[in-house]
Length: 344
Image 1 (cartoon, rainbow, N blue to C red):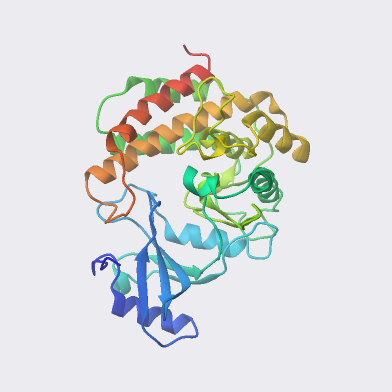
Image 2: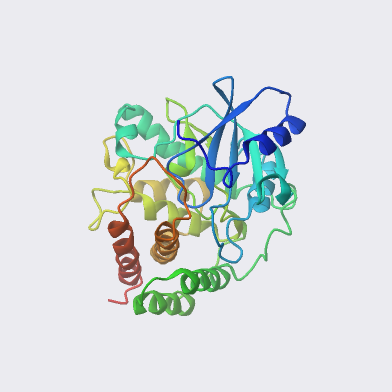
């Protein structure tokens, strides 16, 4: 296990802090979990057994409003008694004397993160079908949560979601871009001018996808993770985002980070959307727009990740990152968004 630099995790200080908030007094070990490309995630083990998970921002300068540990912690803590499966929160640290930046600790959840096709291939066809259905039903459960009942009524404005999102991600694009790509700006303008009538406001996860959930061996979702982008807003944007990551062999241009969902048993994009509509009664006519929004936003996110990797802000990770592919994906996603909007 590689030693974690002290400016990433101050082991003595953080261990002491955890000991004040959890029932333990022994030494703890920390290991970076590969796969996270935004906030940094660590397993925290006691006597060799995983007990907790720690989340902290990446190293180096941070973009405005990004990597908000308080927001992530608040969201999951608010959902603890809902039908949305989330890890149990242990504590939030906002004392920079402990580890330099805010972080939080949550209970370890025993489950599978299907982050690549190799992991997906170990699960049988029935589990993949169950996974597809459970992802949609979990998303529906999130969108049915009463915002005020769980204390999230003041999380964000309840109107103007797309306008706010386009403004936010345009700002992130301007702050992190490494080259000129006029199509990104053109799609942003089109998203504002072609906006459909919004759905009733719900909690919007903002980055809902297979690899941001944990499942059991049968395929049921046991935890929804990575709430960094969560806000109040448009539920159809969450569905569009899920489809934006979903590799679908039946699509003209299959998408998806690792092609996991192209394996037999997984539902295709149309089946996922139909299941969501059947559960919610939503209007499916606007799905192309929200798929376009998802692709454009993913382009902006990918540029930020690419920029951070170039700047060495993601720490030592076990996974191999194809930086050239990541760079190229920015323009590819922006072009796909333009096609979905009928711009080309």
